[in-house]
Length: 216
Length: 327
Image: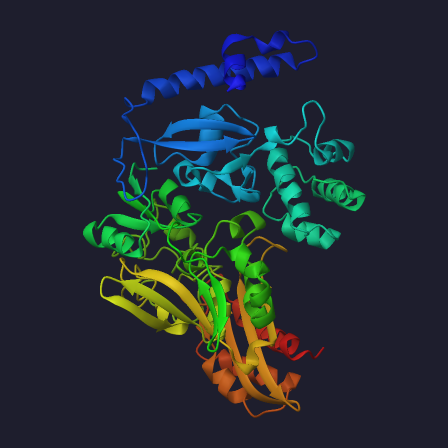
């Protein structure tokens, strides 16, 4: 929850070398949307939920535990909250993007127990106890993940909105052993849409990392 | 999305009871279709019964053939060594469907029960007899490029979207289902309905029946197979037309043929007449062409899908050639 404290307390735009206007705007959006969410949320009825055979009333929040990027989070969520909204709104992990929100674009791709899935079509309550990895969890401290480096090197993006999903999918694609050739990469990356059309560069980035034999 | 209650029963009986007791309850497994429908207001269950704790994930092979648990994921089945060895047609169809992410979420049972992607069904501002019985069919005189050429009614011309189900229909599969009265087996080709006067009903299942497993018999046509899918882009799109073809041959004579089509009807469309025609005949392009022509009898196009009257027979012939291994 370090991220929460940071965004709550510090004006990130003062950090040296940061993209000041964007970060300030992002922090403002996070704060203001949190306030709106707070205003709209019915008073929570938090109950210990050993979910087996237990009925959770519609307004009632369910207690779950998620391991996100190596950090254990104990959370209380309404059953209708998707994993995507939980990550973005509650945990402030806004790297995972909401593109279509209907499972058609792949921008919300995360790993659940090592498998790539669409977080927009996953209910958070159904992920209880699982390990989630988002784009924020890929880098090793300041050292970027090989696929992040390769996307930069090969210019595998323009607007960048689909990029977190592309990279999460690309990591899985290589781990699944489905990145052996350009046609194979194109087929197994087809669930990630890029409207800027950066596809050739994305394929090149994945090809290079796969061929380098680096551990992803 | 509407608010709903959520339960995760550990016992099959508890799951079925939950739906029996509560008319507004629904099962959820992978959720890739149901959550999409709920977000758009096309489904509004008041209770979701999460069946993921039920022990229905096993893939096994016995004397009768392959049994695949209803909760096995599409990706798990497609990668399973046993399935790849015994039922390559199913593997091809699974890999032609959806995307890597969706196949990691979608279950076998859920794939079978997914709803049509007809745009009139999906848009609550437009009429649709499947979504709202009696409101009319918007597609009939509307934009019907993706729609049926077989088995439709004046109430509904939507098509079933699953690739996997087309392979299962061709492979003489059976589904094992459980309800309050116990278990029953349903031939896969009998599971989905034609729209008739009740397009709101996709299958013959009762709403509180649960798919437990899929049985695929071990048959001689399981190895010479091909799944062909024609679509608007190279990958990650629903079929305009798809064909699952399976052949058994003996010295160039076809001893058994199984063919099913997707994207052309309200259910996976088995080509029984074409199969019968091929049995006993030599493997040849001419025979495959004749079988395709036979299969197209009774096909009828609407304003925007006449292209399917050509695409379908060409796809049938091409899939049969690929299955037989002739160029």
